[in-house]
Length: 164
Image (cartoon, rainbow, N blue to C red; front, side, top):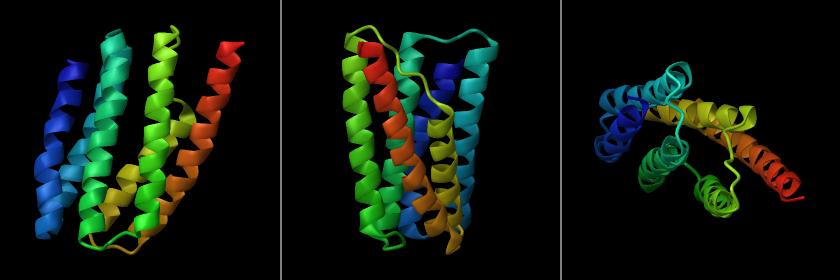
């Protein structure tokens, strides 16, 4: 069930992207909220129902990246976010995707950390606030950038420690 909810969030990306581009603020904010709730729900279901799987552990972070970066790119297109914040987050996600790939190949599963979950919270919060036209959305986005790089450093340190 958790993986189905994750796939639901993947498919939710496209109408959310379109709603942001077309300026449908209420609709896009409702879809973003639904995406955030689905992210909470799939993780809780997987842990409670002991549905943790290698597939789910790889699928969930990938879908989170697709949803967040796609919707953020729509906000970038309509000039509601600074390009630097987008590029910084994109680069971080590409670096971590590479690191996750290498770690899986070596038998190490990088579990989501508290810092990574905090980053995800601020990412969803920023999208939600941006969809409402709130200037606090950009502040939340920059907080997400800060947590993104702190959590990336934490993941790198955990990987290095695993390597030894």
